[in-house]
Image (cartoon, rainbow, N blue to C red; front, top):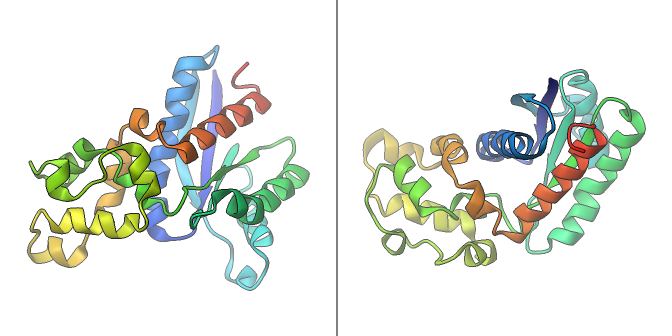
Length: 221
């Protein structure tokens, strides 16, 4: 049996909440379907850089975070929102760190880029059924104002606003209303359909890059 430990360096707290369960489930699905032997997968560790690195270039901050978690990750996911230009963002915000990790941790683990086209929230609005379960509502996709297809979710100009509007459409009250949708992102990461996510170009790119990393780690053939 192989053991695969996961970690994530993300841009913000809500990204960790949503992405950690999604990345764990994606690894489990790939290994269950394609690995030649059983793979035990860890929970995804949230990594951050030390305060002493706050002013350092991003690749240095990620290296410091990776160094702090050394021995606890075999795949380190590096998240950056694509801001409408995911290729540029990947090249500038993820690839330098991946190269640095390859030099420093060649025999220990690999970096994998996680770059939604605009914002992570586009991946949270791709599955109306998951939203209904987490929000506790019977509203239709149209009534929540969700995009009509995975492609249109990925192309949404402001997916964070779309997610907030969908939550508001359920007429939350009291503490639930005051807290907003952020506390529900972890549950959404547990529920969102990987099949729906794989219809997004950015998620399909992540899937492909992760498979390559797993081959480098000799978990996939």
